[in-house]
Amino acid sequence: MVRIAMIGIAGILMALQLKSLKPEYSAYLCLGVSLLIFAFVAEKLQIIIDGLQAIQNCLPLNAGYIQTLLKIIGITYIAEFASDLCKDAGYQTIAGQIQIFGKLSVLAVSIPILTALLDTIQTFLGG
Image 1 (cartoon, rainbow, N blue to C red):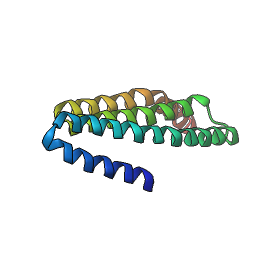
Image 2: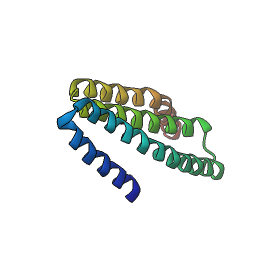
Image 3: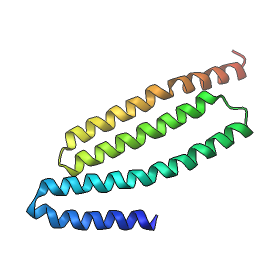
């Protein structure tokens, strides 16, 4: 975590220096730092995936639920990443639209799990 924080802080300090000279270079630098941090995040995602697979092996869970959970994590991360980049570039309206689309995408992906949960509750209640 310290390494990621240092990369982020160094990137921001360099971007602040460039912002007064060439604002577009500052945006490119921020994008580069974000992609570098994303590479570190991808490594951590593999640990999470391995952990979820271990949970799935221990518990009788439907494999579709784990896949849906991973999709939700991916949608959330990508939407947040893209939205923050748009905000940094000064395009708050587009950032807001990306956030709304991300939330609706999570809802759409999670509908089958919600339906299965409601079916289980209905069965449990004797309906």
